[in-house]
Length: 137
Image (tube, rainbow, N blue to C red):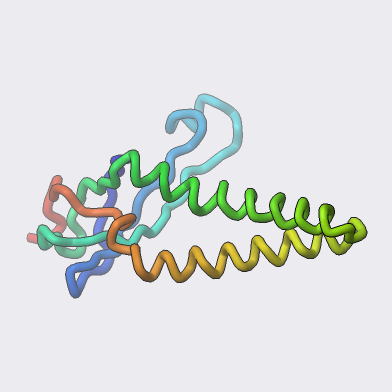
């Protein structure tokens, strides 16, 4: 995954970068009549190359790591929800209790993911790879 953005804050080897979110129409919003307007996202990134505020930079995260993060954040909790509901069903619970056991297991999954995020945050961190243009004189 590669994105281009502008550094808005920096310090301590980290930076916050404003990235224009891509639209579904391929940035041809005026021609698609979908009514969308691209919005900015702020991404926290590792700044090992010393980019400064105002610099236009290239951000990168390995595709494999981006896919792994998506699986962890989306697929794992959904699987936990269904597994919890199935466990409740196998235990003979009523439908409402099955839904509650599913939601409880999903909540536990989110707690585990939060701990995992603290431990492995550097592995899944977006990194500033290149300064494309300097924003300061």
